[in-house]
Image (cartoon, rainbow, N blue to C red; front, side, top):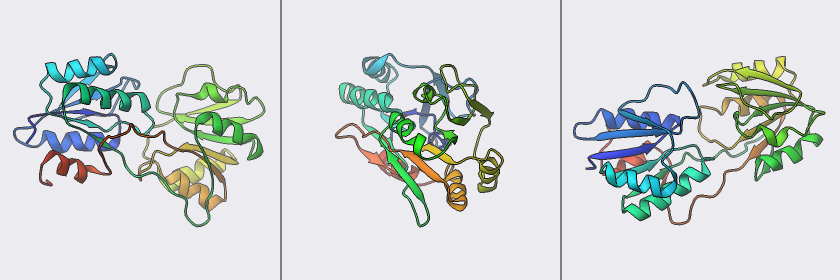
Length: 248
């Protein structure tokens, strides 16, 4: 049984994992948050804020704090963090696993347009609609700043910084959101096209159901590939099995 588990957090699964491990006798759990959100939700166990200084810094932290297992439960689009975690685990000899919930897949009635990046989403938008619900977070809005003929509704927990599209309506809100919430937003803002990252999971999927019911096209930014050779599990049960722990 691992005595000290480091979780690279920021997701719902990371908080749930921390709570489950912190409740177990003999397990020390530390969750690392990047610090991009000023007021993150409560997390059980120990919490550290900020970066490590790249893969080398993380490897040094793993050694100095006697970490027995590393769980990368970051957002599926935290590409740099995941790459650094894989390199740090290899350099330090600390066993590591990546927790990634399955990605979304279209169902009957969906009008999805898969793109490989935010830049690809920006290129696809002019032919799909003028009023856009941009549900991709507050980072990366600069990619859409040149689309001066489109109206954007941007939802985020905290205000984004410039640059951003000139015709932008900001909605400050923290999920989860219901299908009724999302349907109301899409209707009242007269949204014609939704843009989202393939975050996966149920917590943010309500907007996809709402878009389907309203017959709206959805531009889906697909995930970056994981580093070669990493161990991946899809849920908390998979992490516990990997750690050699029984379900609670």
